[in-house]
Image (cartoon, rainbow, N blue to C red; front, side, top):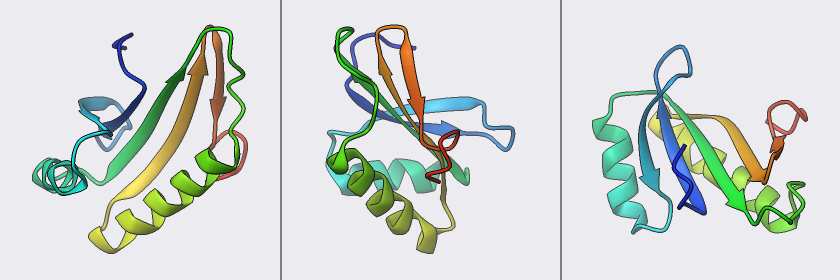
Length: 99
């Protein structure tokens, strides 16, 4: 995984393997165009924090995840997971039952 990003969207194939990465800081219209052109149905949000930070989500992370999941549904896109990484520690929204 690229060590230079802060927030990315991974386009996943049917087996949830990454087949493309999009920077989340781009204009939303550009991101959506790439997502729709990929003809894939699953997306994962990947978030990197400083190695000394805690990977647990805060209220903004939860709100962003819920908003993204709701925004994708009408387009027949699904959010597979939101993973927060800080150093060697990781938090998965799916594993925690938040998706």
